[in-house]
Image 1 (cartoon, rainbow, N blue to C red):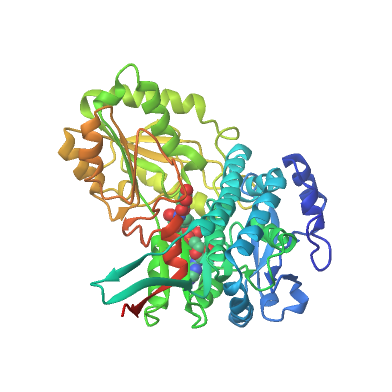
Image 2: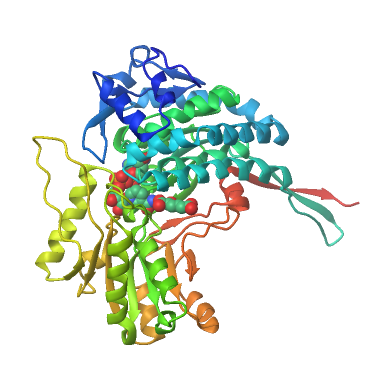
Length: 516
Ligand SMILES: NC(=O)C1=CN([C@@H]2O[C@H](COP(=O)(O)OP(=O)(O)OC[C@H]3O[C@@H](n4cnc5c(N)ncnc54)[C@H](O)[C@@H]3O)[C@@H](O)[C@H]2O)C=CC1
Ligand SMILES: O=C(O)/C=C/C=C(\O)C(=O)O
C-alpha cells in the first residue's frame, strides 16, 4: 500500500493489479468510491474541506456504463487554498538543487514503474481504453519523469561577449505556480507530460485532470507522497471546467497555464487570462489531421506498411488522440484499391472489445453518434460500421462504437470539418501533389499530418508545405521527448518538450556585465 486516504476506504485500490480484481473490488463496494483532493501533500477528506464537499460529479465506467466513483467539484475558495499551498511551497522548491529535484523525480518514475500494471488497469477501467493501450501510456508517463529528471542535469544557458563592451548571459529561473489542466483521452500520459517538466524546472503546481477520468491522477498523489515530493509542490484537485478549471486558470496567484484539451476551451482560457499579460500560456488543442496516401506508397513492397500506419493513425485509442489522422486523402489511381484493402485490414485487426476500447463517456458517445446519423442523412457510403443506437436509460450499457470508414463525404460537411475525436475516418481521392497539399491544409486546425510516400524528394517538398506542427512521414506518433510538440492555427500556441518545456516553465533575464 502506498498511501492511506483519510478514511482508509480507498486503500483497496492499491491491491488491484488485474482487470478482474479491480472489477470485483468495484462490485464489492456498496456505494460508488469517493475521490479526494490531494493538497499540501495530503488527501483531504470531503468532511474536512468545506467548499469542495458541497458538490460532487459522477464518473461512469465506459465499458459497462456503471457509476464507479464520484469526485469533488472543487469550488473557487478550495481552488484558491490549493493555489496558496503551491505558492507557499515555491520559494523552497525553486531553490532546491537540480540534483535534488532530479533524484525526487527519478523516484517518482521508479515508483510508477513498480506500479505499472496497477496504473494500467485503473486507466483502462476509467477511460475505456484497452489494457494494452493503457500499458503503453503508463510507460510514457514513466518516461516523462525519467526524461525530465535527467534533462535538467545537462541544460546550459548561453553567454556571449558583445563588441568587447559587455559580457552577457541568460539567467533562467522557475516561473512560479502553474495550473496544469489535462483532458480525458490519455489521462496519466498527458497530466504527467505537464507535471514532470513543471517540477523539474523548479515550479510548483495545481493540477486538474478531466472530470471524466480522474482515477489515475488520484492514485498519483500516493506516488508523490512516497517519492518524498515536499508538501504543496504538487497539488491535485478535481472538478469540472466551468467551476474548478476556470477558477484555477484565472487566479492572479497562478503564473502560467499548461493546457491540453479542446479548442473552444483554449479560447475560453485565453479570454479568462487576457488581462494577465505576463501569464505563460501553453495551449495544445484539437486537430483534424490529414493522412496523405500517394500512389507510390501502395507499391507491393510497402503496401502493408501504408495500410497499417493509416489504420493505426485513424483508430488507435478509438480515435481519441488529438494526433489521429481522421481525414485520409488517397491519390485517385490507387483510391479504390486502398479503400478495399484498408477496410479489410481494419475489419480484421480492430475488433471492438479486444483491440478497440469503449469511448470515454456517454456524452462523447452521443456526440459521435450524432455525426454518424448526419453521415446517414448526407448519404455517405459506410464501408465499415454503422451509426450506433441511442443508449437507453433503464440499465447501464457500455459506450461501444465499432470503427467507421466513410467515403462520399462532401468537403463542406461537418463530418469532414469538425474534430469528431472518435473511431471515424473519411477517405477522399485527390489528383496530384498540389491538390493533396491544398486539401490537407484546408482546415482551421494544424496539429499533425501523416505523409505516406516512397519518393524522397516529395517527403520534403510536401512535408514542408503542410500546415501542421508535427509531420510524420511513413510513421505515426513517433515521439522523442526533446522535439518541439504543439500545433499551428487553431491547434494551439507554444511548444513543449525538452528545452521548449523549459521556455514554458522558466523566465529568462539577460544580464549585461561590463567587460572593462
Ligand atoms: N487533446 C485534444 O485535442 C482534446 C480534444 N478534445 C476535444 O474537445 C471536445 C470536448 O471535450 P472536453 O472533455 O469537453 O474537452 P475540454 O477541453 O472541455 O476539457 C479538457 C480539460 O479542460 C477543463 N476545462 C474545461 N473548461 C475549462 C475552463 N473554462 N477553464 C479551465 N479548464 C477548463 C476540463 O475540465 C478538462 O480538464 C472533444 O470532443 C474533442 O473534440 C477533448 C479532449 C482532448
Ligand atoms: O505527447 C504526445 O505524445 C501525445 C499527445 C497527445 C495529445 O496531446 C492528445 O491526444 O490530446
